[in-house]
Amino acid sequence: MSHLPPQTKTLGPCGPLRGTITVPGDKSISHRSLMLSALAVGESRVEGLLEGEDVLATAAAMRAMGAEIQRGADGIWRIHGVGVGGLRQPDTALEMGNSGTSTRLLMGLVASHAITATFTGDASLSGRPMGRVIEPLSAMGAAITASLGGRLPLMLRGLCPAVPITYTLPVASAQVKSAILLAGLNTPGITTVIEPVATRDHSERMLAGFGADLSVEQGPEGRIIQIRGEAELRPQQIVVPGDPSSAAFWLVAASVVPDSDILVANVGLNPTRTGVIAALRLMGADITEENARVVGGEPVADLRVRHATLRAIEVPTELTPSMIDEYPVLFVAAAFAEGRTVARGAHELRVKESDRIAAMRAALELCGVVCEEFEDGLAITGTGGAPIAGGATIASLLDHRIAMSLSVAALHARRPITIDDAAPVATSYPGFYASLDRLAADTAEQAA
Ligand code: S3P
Image (cartoon, rainbow, N blue to C red; front, top):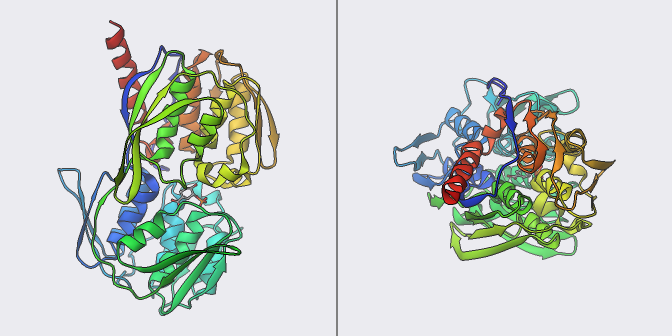
């Protein structure tokens, strides 16, 4: 996050990765569990919450707007909500750090309350487009004054009662969908979102779980999601499954480092999130699901992944929404595959925590990988399994996933790779490097 001092990190090639990794709680589900618990009447409990900077920014904002949120010594978070419509005016600006999800979803929540909130963020977040939420929330009655180009810092004055809308998403974005549904929660009547391309559905699942009156059906133009406002939410006991986006780093690491064999425990396998597993399997990755179960209304399994020879693919564009956060690490997998992998149709990567197309091209090229950049993707020529050259210092650009992806690449490089700033990893995966160290230690133990 913006206040953390930069942390240079150098990683070198490693031996086989063997052992078990437990990934932290899902980021998307963690944000939503805090927000909805803060709107329920009574005490909700959340187990397995991701305690990363992004989610902590959401917790701080919900506290600032009146919710009581505490973490017990048992690691369980207890939240006393204020009731739908009960948020209060925050005394100071809401500091969103690096978190686009916190910002866009909370803008939705504030939009239908009679309160005014200022949203600020770090340099990465302040460069990201908010017009996509400003437009529908303004149509619902919110008055929003943003910085040039519809960016942060911005001030949002909500309207209560807000106006229900029917809105077709112009970009495939779960954040925009969720912002409108959350605004609709305190809006009289029915708010409708139509998504031509299905995106992650954690908001729909969790809103229904909290007792909101929500329906989803398939129409000619796409998924139609309707929420009836002014509902009462019932407190819940939530168990957050492990984040498949965090698991993806290990899936690629074990696939590319020879002789690796690791078990990634407790991975959420919501079908709107598993595109990267499908893409890796198309490339020949050896990933099997064990102990399939349902946790907190979401499918979960342990994933066993063993080293495999990867081959290049043309990444099917229908997988794009379900692997939008995993492209950086998929590009790393492509760097070790046999042949030229082409990923197109992913223009959204340009407006993530960094421009991930440009950032990954620059980083991989510095490490000796041949890339071609398109407006909406990358083509990458892989080594066929041999180590990449490495020996470079790459810029993480305040983007956790760039830092972690290049850390994975370093594990099978001829020379070490330095990440200029690995501090952003704490936004989504604070234990990433500790897990990597432990995996290396476990492996050394097994070999002894
Ligand atoms: C998220 C949605 C996605 C994703 C982000 C989390 C969410 O963003 O990239 O990391 O929790 O709703 P978009 O809605 O911009 O695609």
